[in-house]
Structure formats: C-alpha cells, structure tokens
Image (tube, rainbow, N blue to C red; front, top):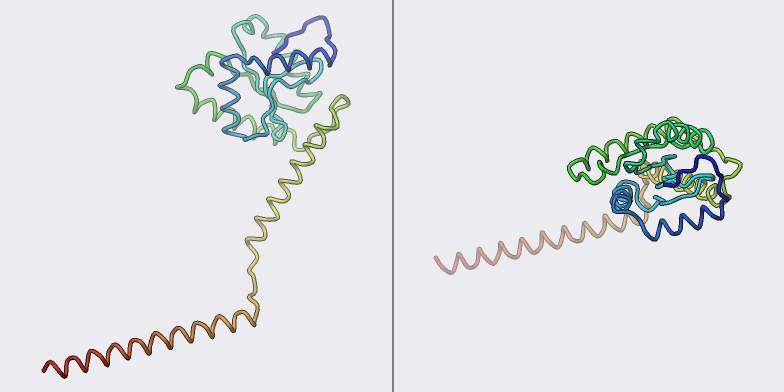
Length: 205
C-alpha cells in the first residue's frame, strides 16, 4: 500500500508503482489474494489505483477495499483513518484493514473469512448503488454495469425455474402411446414366461 502524506503523485506514476507491486507481491499479500479469490472469485483486483492512493485489493462488485497492514501502520493510525474516510466518501467503498500478522496466522483463516464476508454485506447495504466518481474511469463504470446485468440475468434464470412448463400435447400423446406399447410388451413377455413355467411343471409331474 502506498502512503503519501504531503506530495500528491500523478496517476501515471501510481500506475507504474502498482505494476511493480503486482509483479512483486509480499507473502501476506499473496496469501490474502488467494483467500479473497476463494471467497469472491475472479472479480478481485490487486494494487488498484484510486488516485491519489493505491489500495491493496478491490472487490468493486461488493464496494469493498481490503488492506493488509504491516507493522509500519501502527505509527500511522490517524492518517489511515482519514485516508479510509476519504476513500469511502470519494469512491463509495468500505475499507477493511487486516494486519499482516493475522493473515500469516493459519489458525485465524476462518475468522478472517467471516470478517471479510460481514464487511462485504455491510458495504452492499451501505452503498446500494455504486455512484460514478469524477475520477472513476469509464472502464470501472462499465464493469459495474456488467456486474448488474449478470445479477439481473441470474435472477431471471432463478425465476424461470419457478415457472411450471406445460407439455406439448402431441409430444405428450406420443409419450403415452410409447409407454402403453412398452407396458403391453412387458405383460405379453410375462404371460409367455408364465406359460413356459406351467408347461415345464406339467412335464415334470
């Protein structure tokens, strides 16, 4: 995560930094990225520029930013608080901070998963509609619209399953005729089998 207190870096410079950070993730960033992908799938983005900052992870469908904080953040709590508040107002996202120490602790995986899911649910309720910020790119907005379309399609498919389909009369008639023929054939075979057994019984005794 990039911390800038005084000097504002250009978006192009931030993008260059982000590319380098993506190519050389820390151990805890790699662990968190895998954990987020397990929860949200391929929609997770890493080292995203939200000018004038770079956030560790963004799940824009859920309006959620996740930051992995190292020990240096213990001295910057007040700054981080103001930064998070600005990001929430500007980009309408909830910022969740998880310490690198907690990420490395494999015994806390379930706890972290629960916290992430709860934060995502809270973010959806808090920001029901993702508003387009002035410096939000057209690509980000298109991706959000695509996510809305996918959600609508999923709902329509779910609704279709509830609809009772009416069978075609001609197909239904053919099906019944076929079942009748099969039933008649089975009865005939059963009668022939019974007759053979009776003849065999008569010869024996």
